[in-house]
Length: 232
Image 1 (cartoon, rainbow, N blue to C red):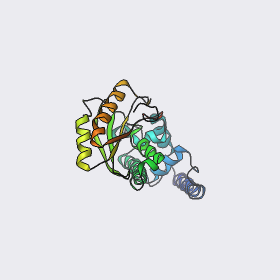
Image 2 (tube, helix red, strand yellow; image 1 turned 180 degrees about the vertical axis):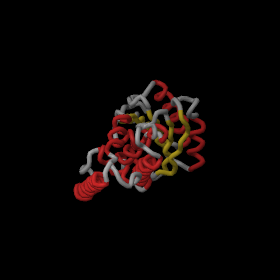
Image 3 (spheres, rainbow, N blue to C red; image 1 turned 90 degrees about the horizontal axis):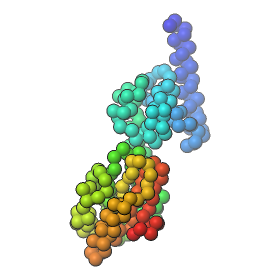
C-alpha cells in the first residue's frame, strides 16, 4: 500500500470517528446504532483504523448489544479482530452500566423504585448462561442491606437452603427480602420448583418477622414477579 493510500485511509477513519463523536454528543442516547456504540467503544483499543468489522462481527455472534456486553471474555476473544484491549473496553462499559444501575437501587427504597430494580437485575442477570440465585435483604424502610449471591445452579435445595436464607436475614437484622434468579433459557416463567422453594422460604420467615416481598425471575425475554402472579 502506497503512502498516499495509507494516509487517505487514516484520514477517512479519523473523519468517521469524529462524525460518530459529534452524533453521540449532539444526539443523545439514541444517536448511534448498536454496532456504532460498539465501534466507539473499540476506538479506545485501536488507536487508528476501522472498528466497524469487529463491531458487526460481535453483534452477529452475540445477537444484541447487551449480549456482547455480558459475554464472557474468552468468548469475545474468539471473534476475529477482537484483542485483549478490545475485551477490556467492552467489559469496562458493562461494569459502568452495572454500577450505575446498582446505585439507583441502593439510594432509594426498593419497593418505591421497582423499575430501577428490574433494570439492575436485567443488566446483571438476563444474559447469564447459568442460573444464579440471589437474595436482596431489605431493612424496615425497604432499603437494600445486602445483595447476596447464594450460588449458581437450579433453584432447589441444592442451590438455596431456606434455613440459610432466613439465618442470613436475621443476622443482618433484615425485615424483608426479595428472591431473585435467572433462567438461561430466556423464558422467565416460574417452574414448580421455583414456586415450591419460594413458599417454603416465605413460610419459614413469616413467624420470625422476615417477609418475602417477591421472587423475581429474569430472562432475556423479560421478567416475572411471582407476587404479581399471585404465587406468594
